[in-house]
Length: 632
Ligand code: BES
Ligand code: ZN
Image (cartoon, rainbow, N blue to C red):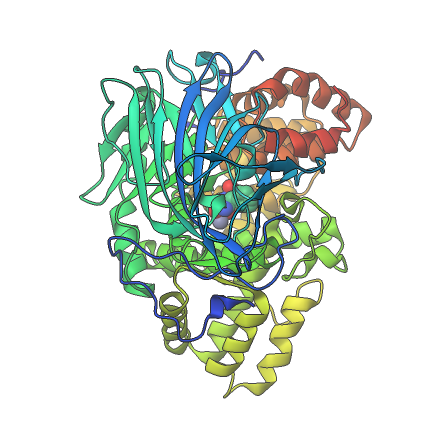
């Protein structure tokens, strides 16, 4: 049995140093991937996570001129914000965090007065610029701090080559740590950027991108479609490009790019399937940047250039649903954008639904049902951990006063998915698809809040299903999972469960029928096993299926959860390798959480974390610090 064990993880030891107006009824949607899309009108509600007052004056275009200084871990230069002053306001309120604001100029050069407010945890400092009602452009000269939360500066040893690397992660409210702006998803702007990097490196952004290095290290970018600030992205490194068809491609470090291009070869088919489902792809090109292993997420839907973890490079294309997910965000999220982080399920629930439909179109219903069943299992586990009556298990969140990042869990994704699937099952797929297609078209380049969505759902889809209205509100505003939640059906998984039961009843691993199992069947098998298991049973599994050596990150992570639950010490070296070899929070979080449950586990966790922490991105550190009560 070699399926799950044949390829090594990417660079495993690399950092072994161990209301919205959105709805703006009637406003014409911009033309499909037209030359330039106007910035949409801002929403009328106050985003609890932004100091900005876009209903008074909104930023409609951003010009960036930045120099990337690796030795100082600093971006320095100028942000020029073009304003649309709707009310004749005399102050522009921006979000900043850990920025050194040096000078502010208006239009053609008069110096402006500005004040910085008191820093608040995760929100940062309000920047108030005195403007005139006819001020068109505000130029801000500034520099980032060495520990700006959005930025991760990698040493060459944390990459697969010999060069340093920088990437940004702006979602949810980290854009303000590298650009002073209106950091709320309810404001959209177009942007242009000039980025200066060491000449041996290449820069790419969530914009029109180069495919080769420039001679002088200067790169110019243009993003003609209006985007919210959380989709602003930059990466700088020794990058190579491989095309995948004529409108898709892959960027990665040279040592990784061939493998990445092979793994992601189905991307053009995914784009075609997505367009067939819900309308034209409106962003021009769709490329994927495969980052070094410390990237804290599976993927990030930066427009035109998805950022992805190398842990999806399993060598058998079995983890590409992540690309379907990030691609789907090109509609759900990037076209129709959650108005505030309390409406996060509108981004992620819709995207998981869309992702599943792309996977079904490409690989068939039995494949997509396995994915849906795994997602439902994750959700049930999350609900159990959070408590099914926790207010944070409602789809509509209340994150005011808290870091929106703390509201990110399976609820928005998987409960959101199940709600949409429930509606689909009741109204029929044909009707639901028509609704979604027109939803993406009519609200393209706009924000959407939960209440506006529910109103239009009532109007357009539930007129004939009045009893569903109350049920939908239960899903959205009540905690827990309604009893009507759909139950994905997988015959393949039923067979897997029988094998897990046989093993639990004493059958030897070698006698199990595992021939031909896909990654998803292995995952379901591992999750279906009882825990703890006796050391000799764990040894039997490991020796028979080579689980500790699996090159499939998902399988390895699922196995290592069992390893911890069973205190199976022979696999601790594999655990340590995994935890120090990548920084993807989705893998780190459950493993550290499981370790923290026993004193011996907590001790091991702290020993590993001490080594691994410097290589993790801030967002992963923040999560694990809490789990382990880390005080440095
Ligand atoms: N947009 C999210 C990542 C995100 C969410 C970053 C909230 C910061 C705050 C992205 O689309 C995502 O959902 N990524 C998932 C992968 C996906 C296949 C479920 C991840 O990173 O695991
Ligand atoms: Zn997502």
